[in-house]
Image 1 (cartoon, one colour):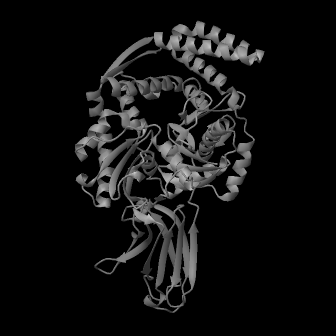
Image 2: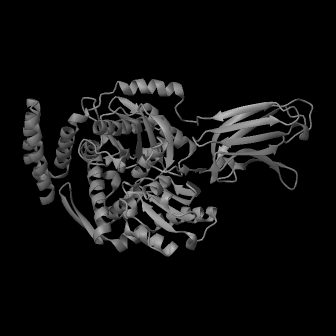
Image 3: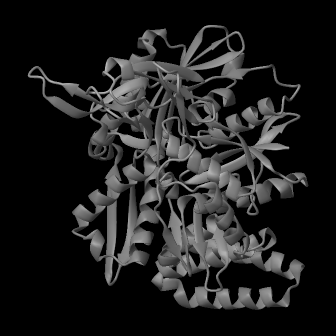
Length: 563
């Protein structure tokens, strides 16, 4: 059984392709959305999801979120007595999602299709695959999030030649892809994006405005206070889109704060972020060689796309209202489920071919001579240009800069800058050259081959002798190698994770602790409720626990509504 997974910055979802089409599985709390947050309690147990999200407020030093933005880097986060890489944190989310799917189906899950931002680099894609391995999954395919959204909308069933633009603004990343459907093929013509632009950045804008208005220094806030503020502002940001204005009430020390903001001011404050969205939109249309009038539909997905300023931007640029009748939080996950059904060759699905593109230009470092004959080095020579349909193979001929040169070092880069120092180095390949040869006699044919799984093969051939040299770039600098993955897999297997059957209780306690942290006026009552719930848990009477948990939840709902 193959599942489809949306491994998101703020929330993650899991599902599969069933008898009625794509279906999502709820977590232990009955929700489809599992917050992409990890925490660790005093006993060293890992907590995943909503309970961990509540602990961002009550135990910020033991909790971590938005780590998807760190994928492809060696950054580590200290939780308890252990350091975790982004791949490992993501693997813990994946394990939780798989447990939910197994609870819903009663089947063992070992295979998955996982969605990734279209603009994810090679390193980020390989880190996502490594996260799947660490979670015990065979990752059948990484599907670009905009392509998954197209499948969720059933665009593969539209008329041949239909063209669509998918606008995907999530919690941490922004993607735009231009797709065309013809003869059972979903072809991506162009992708662009920004891996550091999402709902979190708009929340930063709101936080900066609040702190400026109230003359508060963020650096002076304790981690708990900052967590409280972020949570209140996040709720306010969602309400702003629905009501046009909103506000928060917050007690900081002995000071009571009431702050309001309307949609007009928020839009002005966010103008620089909106402008950052325009550039990838324009680049994708330019690379696809299309005018706005040539698009059949524009689709908005990603939770942050609910903001009215997003719809206004799209309407102004393209002269039409976008589609968003599929829940924007679920669209990518539903599409990943369709992709899982295609991978499993589900007979209820017509055969559809999904193409992909190379999101970045791939090339090598070269030197050039200026008009005076002086050698200038550090230039980027593209071989595979961005938005080339994969699999793709391209070749160019290069020669040494000097006669009698005995070695040629080929440095491989990805990026869009003319100078390699501003691009990302992927690796290098040394080519020994026969001595006493001219530059022309030591010419080298360099071939790049990039496949559907994001693996780049570099092949260099000495044209005079046909001697071949090869480099397969399956690993990027800073990524885990196979030995590291095996070692970290063993370490993760030894970590204590709260069992799924106990997650409702853990989440209830985490919510109560978060409210205790936030609402000083209700602390005595909350302490009593927490003590009562702990006593019931110790009884191990499941019927009693279930009934008390329901009553506890209703009491907390009432408390939040009244303060």
